[in-house]
Image 1 (cartoon, rainbow, N blue to C red):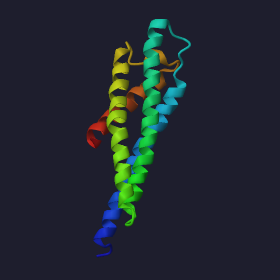
Image 2 (spheres, one colour):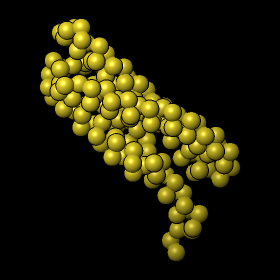
Image 3 (cartoon, rainbow, N blue to C red):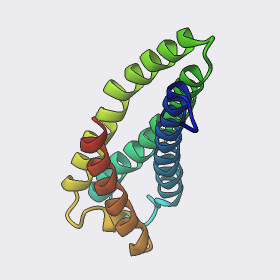
Length: 149
C-alpha cells in the first residue's frame, strides 16, 4: 500500500476539515456582504422593523459562521497532529457549543425573518439581486445544515 492506514485517516481528517472551513467561510463572507449592503434608509417604519430583523440575523449568521471556521481548523489540526488529541476535543466542544445554539438559531431565525417579509426580503435591498442572493444563500445553508447535522 502506498499510504499507511494512519496516513489515510489523516487525509480524511484534512479533507473533512477543509470542507468545513470552506463551507463556513463561504457562508460567513456571503452573509457579511449581504449584511453590509442592506439599506434601511429607503423604507417605511413598518417594513423597516422587519428589515432590521433580517439585517440583525444576517450579521449574526456571518459571525457564527466565521467562528465555526476557526473551530473547524482547530479540530482539523488537532486530529492531524498525533501529539495533540486534546486539542481536537477542545475544538470539537467549542464547535458544538457554537453550532448548537449559534448556527441552529441563526438558520432558524434568519429563515423566520425572511418568511415574515411580504417579498422574502426584496423590499430590504435597493438592488433585487442582493435579496435573491440572500434567499439562495439561506436555502443552501438549510440544505447543508440537514446534510451536516
